[in-house]
Length: 253
Image 1 (cartoon, rainbow, N blue to C red):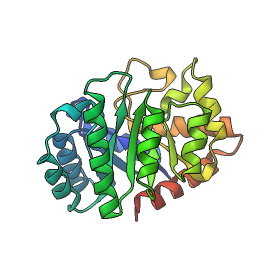
Image 2: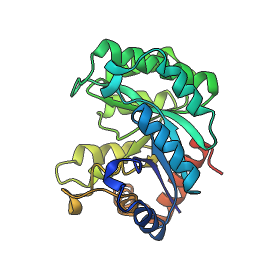
Image 3: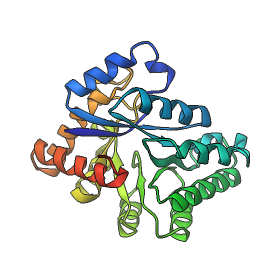
Image 4: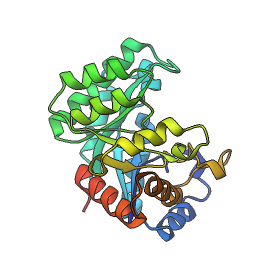
């Protein structure tokens, strides 16, 4: 069995054929989906999907892109969503200094607020960081002890080692299949199997052979095959270890 630990099935790209997308993924061996909230509305939709589909679990959060519009009262709405069944994490949240669609101050304020929610409820944190590794580490270290996964890992070896030293998990997406992604493949090779999870970030980041098309959770199988090749171990071992990691991290039954 495989687990897609980070997808966005609530997004409009799946509104026409969501049932078929989930069916294709299950046929490819995906047993669970963790649907990640990116806004308040998205987090609400994520919770609704977890009710409709037995295989779907929810994470609630607000992406750093939307930090400027996040109000103090919105934190109460996040806490209300967390009380629902099948919410297994807080996120995604973090810092994105690549696009800077919200001010860095507001990104940090939002990030710290959601970390506090995660800690108060003993839930793991799904971290987004892009070109903000130093500040991300500073904030996370100040919040220890903390369970966290750095999703769609894009950092260098130093950042990887820092995250691993803090006990965090590392999640890779289908972009490791890109022709010019040797640096990411090197990070996969350096990540211990007991700290590694798989995700599609669907509908984004389709594998090399499908670039330009919508990504789907069924592509997690192709991702696992690539990780198997990079690590030099069997597909079955990659599937078993990453599934075990995800179950433990998210508390999946």
